[in-house]
Amino acid sequence: MINHHRVLSFVLPILNIVVCFPLDQFFPYGSSAGDGQLAACDDCSTSSIPIAVNFSFFGSSFDSIYVNSNGDVTFGSPLTQYTSEPFPINGSHKIIAPFWTDIDTRKGGRLWYRTTQNSDLQQGTTKIRSLFPNIENFAATWMMIVTWDNVAEFGCEEPCSQRNTFQLVLITDGTHSFAVYNYNKITWTKSSQVGFNAGDGEHYYSVPGSMTDAVLNLPQMSNIGIPGQYVFRVDQNKISNADTIDECASSPCVHGNCSNEYLFYECICEPGYTGVNCESEIDECQSSPCIHGNCSDHLSYYTCHCHAGYTGSHCQTDIDECTSSPCVHGTCTDDINGYLCSCMPGYTGVLCEIDVDECQSSPCIHGDCQDMVNSYTCHCYAGYTGQHCQFDINECLSSPCVQGNCTDQVNGFLCNCIKGYTGITCDTDINECERSPCIHGTCVNQIGNYQCICDTGYYGRQCSQFEVSLLTPLFVGLPLILLTLLFLLCRKKCKRQEELDNSGEIFPFGDKTLGPSKPAFRNKQPSRNAFVSNVVNVIRSVWRRITPVCTYILEKIQTGYIHISTKINLGERAHKCYYYMSEKIKPLKNRSAKVFPQSQENA
Image (tube, rainbow, N blue to C red):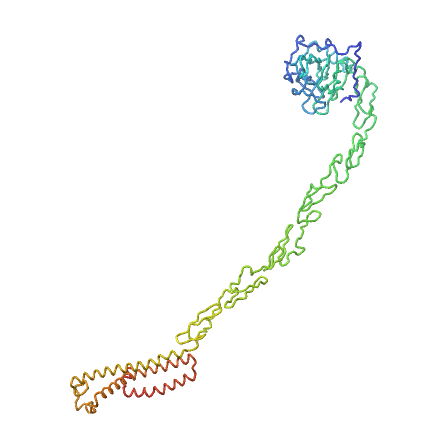
């Protein structure tokens, strides 16, 4: 890029001097010159216009071009952007801009354009040869002439008296390319950009005064000494001005190439050199390019020796020591020439590689500790609970003692049973009847007690006492029964005797076979008184009948009494009674057996 401060531009005095580029010196334009016209519009462009030969622009060749209404031509694509931007522009703006601004031909003016290979080529060849004598045998083979004739600005108020007239001429021989800017009048501007832009953000040229009101002076300015006309060479990487004197003839550039400019030269220094004549070696370390390191200067380059922990061509990058993920169980924070591990809970160590032993403090009071990540688990001994096995489990909470009071113990309980219950949980009723406390009765078990339901004739807590008074009916009733039977038999006997007496029989015997030969007759006693005889007979009959029965009853009474006396522990009295009754009954029994043997056997 050309240094703007070193480009010489002339602003000529108005008085007695031509102050603009006359229209008659413009390249011919209009319909009479065979131009095409872009219809009146705002922010419009032509279609792609072919270029007969390659047109070089900033080192690149193009075979087509677009004419845009807003004071410029572009390569590659049209441009309808009406708001100009200062150069450089990075992107699609491959632009040659004699006056890029917001033009509206609907308000007035015309846009003419044509490409030519006729007599205009000679005029263009002559112009370039006069300005660039070092390019020998230059002969134009293609030209393009674009003229913005008396155009108005967008938004101007009628009758839009302020108008601009300027022309762009592109000339090439297929190798060398040139751009000519002609300015007849510039009466208005809207931040207009004048110059060139390659679209790469690096190669560009901006005419001094662009984007300011200074562009209103373009008809009086020039880079070739002709007011209102600029000529540029545009095929190289750097835009060149025209010049008729070779300022580089003396080879002023010590370490660089000389670029001939109008009335001056410019040295394009070799890498590593600077100065007006490229005479000074550049100290690449002067700008302190090594941000975190020491700089070593070399010819056209430098070397950075980075401090520990930094890298990069300028030692600008902090080495991320966390890239290798050194923190085993944690988050790595990069530091200068190091790192810091923020460990996850439960880990420690420089690399967070050590699992913290939470069991080291013996937190489990009554249990075994199992270490875990950032925690621990207590496995409590039997009978303990809680996070730290600090609580003795109260086994009495579940009320295990059914009939008793519970006393808590470690991993167990003790039941103090109430009276009448037993078992580990006092759930078993003690059977007080198990030892058979009721001697003569039935035992009924109760809670902590028993009840004896005594057999008949017995009483007491354990039915051990006999109620002797119960034998009273026996001793009283038996004689009464005997007397009653005696009475009934006597009555029956008497009645029978009366019947015999009434029948007239001599003997009171029912056996009619009696006679003197019979023993009964021989033993017959003289008759007694009938009544007395009847009574005696009744007594004898009764005695005969009841003696075996009474003997049997007395034996049973004797046996029963002995049994009873044994049960009620009468002791000596029982034995005395037994012997007494035996002595009394024995004679009676013997006598009965002699008198009534048949009755005794029946009994």
